[in-house]
Every structure is written in structure tokens, then in C-alpha cells.
Length: 298
Image: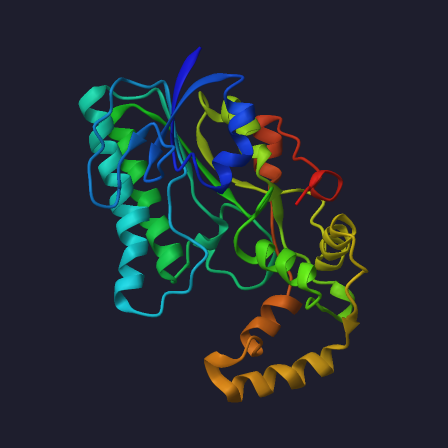
């Protein structure tokens, strides 16, 4: 059985895919949580690894937060970029893996809206999160090339799974509390990926490498997702308000500033579609994405 080092393996992604991974690999987790096998803060330390690994799944990272201070901005670079450098230095000391799989993000493209964005799109992400991931991608590209390690960069869209963080988690919580509203019947579409698919992709990319967007080809709408979540929670379907009403509320929110839960920026995100193409991954890897609407369980 191949040995797999999983950084960030006790976070959201790890909790969702570990049952699948341990069927195929001997998994060692590495991170800051008490349940991690190797306890290390990659942002500050080079890990002391006990052995050489066949595959490294590098998912440790900072996301899902809007930085408000320079210190908070720097933390993205410390974790996502410097943490990647520290990991590689640790790997050099015990022997290089055959394959390294980096969990990046579609945020590297810097797009707020668009349709079927491919891997050829320029990396225009300017946020600390996106920029730190771009820098990590660039470092790993050079490091893996110089050391003969097969590199795979996976750029997942919004991840769906149990206890999902970020925007999907916020949707679940809002529906649970009865606060969620669809705008214009929830027609907006955002790319989404079942977290389980990351585990299914590992054997497909480990020897091949490459850069891939990964998301469900069905591209569900906000309306479909909200109805699915409401049904699982035993709640009635979220009501929909017309765009003009949401626009008025957003303008009030703009005037109120940070205290407002809804403003023009959030309105734009909730009403403009943003989708990514996973055609390359499907064609080159023979991968069939899991249908989110059919399989997502909160």
C-alpha cells in the first residue's frame, strides 16, 4: 500500500475524504490539530517527517475569511505560501515523493463572474488568498521540475460536503434559521464540487500530473441548492424576491457600512453566475464528476 502524507487532513476536506483514502493508501496527516499524526505549524516550521512518502496531498491552507488588517493579510502568505516552502524543505530531508498533489483554488483567476472559465485563463487573482495560492503554485512548479516530482495542481470550485465552510456553509446556516432568500428565483449558477471527488482524482493524477479545474459538470443553480438543503433540514423552500427589491436593500446596506449583512457587493455575487470548465480533467483523466444535487448531504 502506498504511503500518502496529507497536510490539512483533519480539516473539512479530510473529514469528508478520509474514509475513501484509507481504503487505498496508508495515510499520515500533518497539521496543527490535536488529532494530526504529525503536529506542526507549517506557517512557522519545517516539519520533521518520520519517513519518505510516495504521494503528498497538500491541502493545508487558509481560506474563507476577509482580511481586515495587514496582519490578517500576511497570514494567508504565511500559511499558503511559506507553509508550502516549509513542507518541501521537510520532504527534502527524508527523500522526495513520487507525486505531489496541491489543492489550489479557482480563485486564482480573480473572476467575480463569467462562464466556463478554463485553465488557460490568466491568473489575475489579487486577494491575499488568491495571490498566496498563485505564489505557492509557482514555487511548486519550479521545485517539482527541479526535483523530478510529478506535480498536480487541482483548482476546485466551491466544495460541497458535510459541515461545509464558506459560502455554502453560510447558505445552510441561513436556511436553518429561516433567513435565506433567493433573488430572482435563484437562477444564478456557481460551479461546485463534491469533496469526495478529490479522493477519486488522486489515483488518476498521481502518475500523470497537470493543472485541472475540478467541478460538477451539471453546474447547479442557487435555487436548486437551496431547495435541496431546505428539504434535508425539513424546512419550506426559501422564498424568492425580485431583483429590484434586493437592489434597494443592497443600497441601504451600502449606506450602513460594515454593520450591514447585505450590500451591493453581496448582491453582485448572488446574482452573477460564475462557472468553470472541467472538460480538461474529464477528457484527459477519464474522470466523471459526482452529481452534486443527487449526492450532497449536509
